[in-house]
Image (cartoon, rainbow, N blue to C red; front, side, top):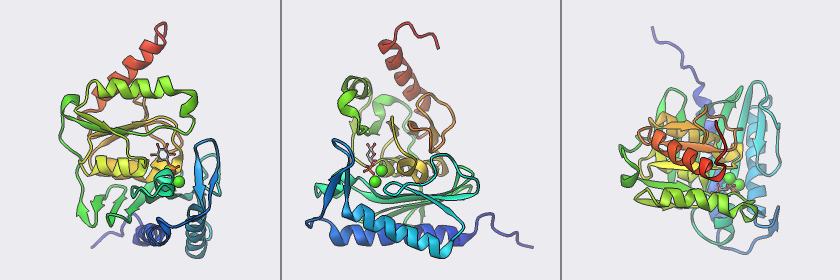
Length: 275
Ligand code: IPD
Ligand code: CA
Ligand code: CA
């Protein structure tokens, strides 16, 4: 007797369809003149972000009319809603996209009561589709993914990103960046948190940290890293939630060393702290 699959396969099919369609729209408009607006001093939104998000909302409304959607440009529930909720970023790497730099993707996760069940991230420039199902492993274009085996920071290539309010906290953000630069083999900043996470899952990078992220930046990538054998927490080592804002995702072996660097840096900025 075969047991029924725990997760309906149509959910991952829908997630894949969404990000591949997103990639088609992104590439069709990439490098051409487009409307770009500012949501903040350095936080952009292009007309393509909006077009991709409209496509996604229509797809979910047609296929799963009772599911919730939380996506970057048109919002959604501020707290974790009960039941299924699709968490979608129409372009992760919008600043790259608006500047014609081909490092961006679309990212989606289906969360149920806040826990990701399936994830798909598609990089249309490299035609790389990263997928995962809870308990079912992570894949790149159908091939199983595994995190790296680097065991020390000096042998590691790390990656991070900068928040849109960096102008008001340069010392804090660049200070921690410097602490890792001083210990790792290399540190990169690609401009797409979802791609950063996929590359940790694929063993191309060994660890990723970033403060001040949104659920749509990390919900999909965090599942892909953990299903590839990595470890994902917040930057204090506490359990990951996509609403938790800051994230540390590693190959597992480097996790404690990275937490130590973060903790040491925080203590150096607030020497009287005792926690
Ligand atoms: C941004 C990217 C970037 C990260 C920012 C995110 P967006 O997402 O993931 O790498 O550093 O914190 O907001 O705005 O391009 O969707
Ligand atoms: Ca994003
Ligand atoms: Ca975005």
